[in-house]
Length: 117
Picture 1 (cartoon, rainbow, N blue to C red):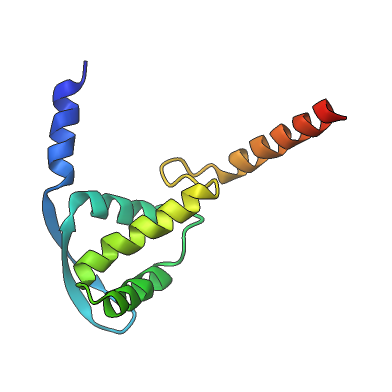
Picture 2: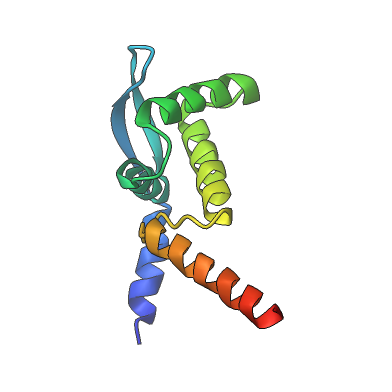
């Protein structure tokens, strides 16, 4: 039903765009990366439970230095790691109702305990 739109979205994700980002070290860097990365960057900034903006950008700089990669590439690398880690622990950057998720898991544990009693 939405085949064309899905294909267009796939194309769009891998186009690049540029933003000027001010980093905690006081330097403004011109970052060029995939639109997919920018989309997740924006989600991370908006997500209530994500690391702070300053921490994220400092980690990007450390990653670039440690891995010997560009800051542009480090942004995607760090976002991939952070979001993968957080979502493995139950967070959802696309639906940030963490309180509901925690309550649902607590109810599931309660039901399991009750069932096994």
